Image (cartoon, rainbow, N blue to C red; front, side, top):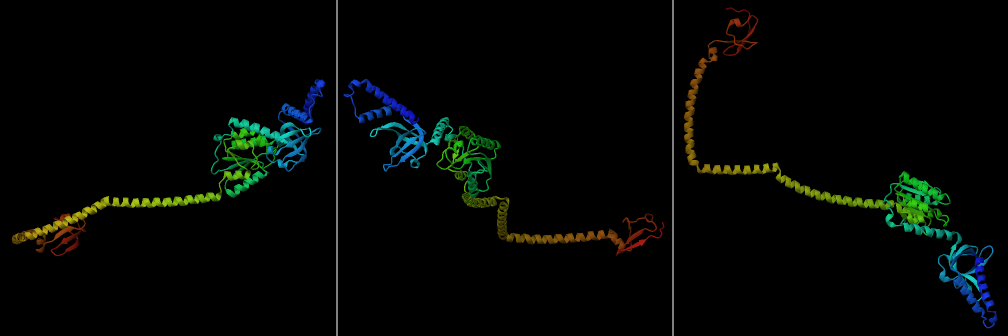
Amino acid sequence: MYADEIFGKSFACFAILASMEKAGQAHAMAAAITVSQLNRQVKTLLETGLTRLWVEGEISNLARPASGHLYFSLKDKSAQIRAAFFRQHQRGPTIALKNGDQVLVFGRVSLYEARGDYQLIVEQVEPAGEGALKRQFEVLKKKLAAEGLFDEDRKQELPPLPERIGVITSPTGAAIRDILSVLARRFPSIPVVLYPSAVQGDAATPELIAALQSAIRRDECDVLIISRGGGSLEDLWAFNDERLARAIAESPIPIVSAVGHEIDFTIADFVADVRAPTPSGAAELIVPDRGDWLRAINSLTSRLARSGQRVLENRGQTLDWLSRRLLQTSPQQTLLRQHERLRELRRRLASGITQDLLRQQPVLTNLWQRLRAGAGRSVADSSHRLELAMRGLHAVSPLATLDRGYAIVEDVKSGKVLMNAADAAAGDDIRARLAKGELIATVKSKSG
């Protein structure tokens, strides 16, 4: 509402007062009131007749007394109104207010009784452009929160070590440079895919949504960063669009929102799976520090090596124990023990036999003598009989015949003994065995 409207309502109040005075003209002198009473009544009419309201205008005549209150005029092209911004209502960076600022002020209309000036008692001040946007922001925020788009239980966890990172931002902005710089420092081996998009202006929201849909369709990254550098509320407004918010909420790929500076908040921040304070902060959230990672791996490797060594030592002791058990129960050891037992039994048997023989020595001696005498007689008889048999055998032996001048003739080729001259032919080789030696001859002729 503008100042001229407020003036109109104020004049209406004064008209009411005038009509009241005219109606009681007969008693005017008796019912006269003081200026203070008049101003108090006007003040009451203004404060009860008008509710709190927003007024847009330009700041001028700004004063900052030592009390901490702010006094200024709020004007447009054709009117102005005084305003008082008391210290107890001041919140946020009011120190930045200056003459010429176009602002939205929220407050109530009142009257300064001492001078009879009506004024705005200011309770809140916002930049004119951002004020409307902030109200839109709050309306959308409440709507999406009521639908559950900000709930923690629907948000996805980030991978502990992504295989590939996607970044949705302007290819020429500071955000991509900051992100790539941090990633190169912390974990340079992870590849990065850029999905280019405008991040400011009317084309930004459709391009951001298209880039996000492209990343989802290509499915080549396991985490996405949607980002841009800092700026005013108007600069960041594309990230407060309801269409983008719903596209982020529906993404099957975890999304980190890193829009503006740490103090900036957008709808994309609330609906994303993780909100990072800055683009650089997003890169630090997504990947671990390579040095910390390597130190953790080295620590785990050392612990694994020590654990493995203990396991090997324990298993080695168990193996030694089992080997001894196996050796004790092996067939070879059983045979060795049985062999030792057999040797012991043999020793004991030999010892027993020796002792028995010693005890039986007189009897054995007699038996030995008798056996020896009998054996001698038996051998003598056998020798005599053997000699007689040899003489008889020699008498009929062919060898004995040879001793008397005879010979045994054999065919050399067949080894057959020749009993008849007809069995040999002229030219055959024959062997003649004599009592001593043999002769090889060739048959020249035969007779008989």
